[in-house]
Image 1 (cartoon, helix red, strand yellow):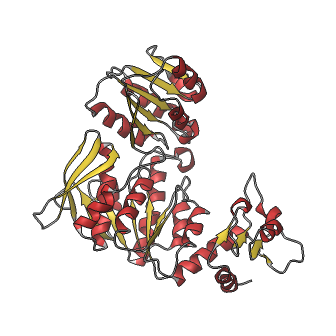
Image 2: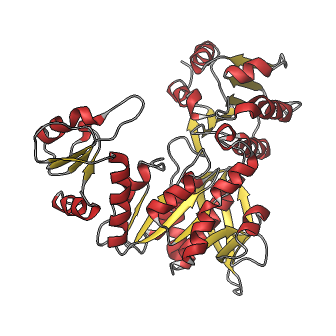
Image 3: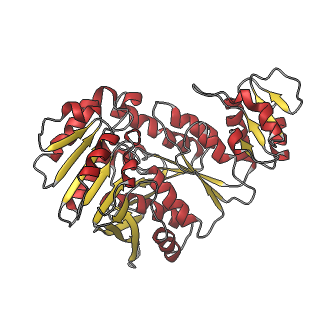
Length: 435
């Protein structure tokens, strides 16, 4: 069946797609995806019983006329999303990068919704399935669609661009992450800049941190809007301060009026994410007051750059994910915070392949001789490498929880940082004033 015919069915289903029989929306279109540990083709008839109007399968052998057989359901989902994207008027903004892309996406959304009808990627729904599902939520009234694109192998950003076809885009930064999949730091750069190459062919606009020499170089031949601390930028950061929440002063190039924003984000490193949101807001003709209101009403969640006061303790919770670049930024920021009685809990950084031991050792070297009350390290790699008797090591977070239950923190400023797979978020259940 041609994608145009499937699109007509999608219209009949009120522009609504489901892929999980546990979350069925009445009168929707069910698309049976499959992976290594699941196969939704087994549930297409169940999806119709629960209220879906049609279902798409690549394995169905029955006679139900409301179940449409295709060669590949994932490919159909992606084609449907691309076709739908091109039927809608929405301007599509693509976001990728090693660190900060989710925070930047949410900041941009918080700013742009001050003026526009927008949709944006929810959570980390940023892969070959999440991107098309997000695109399919674009409505006729949607003016801007903010699409986060993640990758851990070469070619993935190019593939996502071929589905989302962004009109403009931003690479937040390039750093050492997913080295196991990319093969090297150069592999990271080449993959992330696939977004730039797509926009070059489309003559789209890219938003570039002018202070990042790698991104500036790769964006030389593109239409750009720049931000940074240099006087050459379109949007200039005049002053940043994080004690602990980030405050920023900025102005437009050619104007003397300085704007001030007081954010709820922790970490000096977040100034780049804030400036990206300011620059994109300005590009889409928001006023400084609208930009300020959008950013100041954004509260981080999901264990990203959160400042929490629990009992007598201050906790900088940043354990959604970690890689060598983000880990070093978080540590440097933490060392500069004007607090006493500091301790840290660090979890292993995943997906580093042959670079794992080198990068973990670099973190251990940074920690040497720092004025910290306690250092707790969680994970197999840190346990293997650590030879500092002052640092306590735990193979998993449950062992650490047992230790803290017997030795609770009081009057401590604590950084928690690690890859999501270490599950340091479990610690939040026990950080209360001891009884």
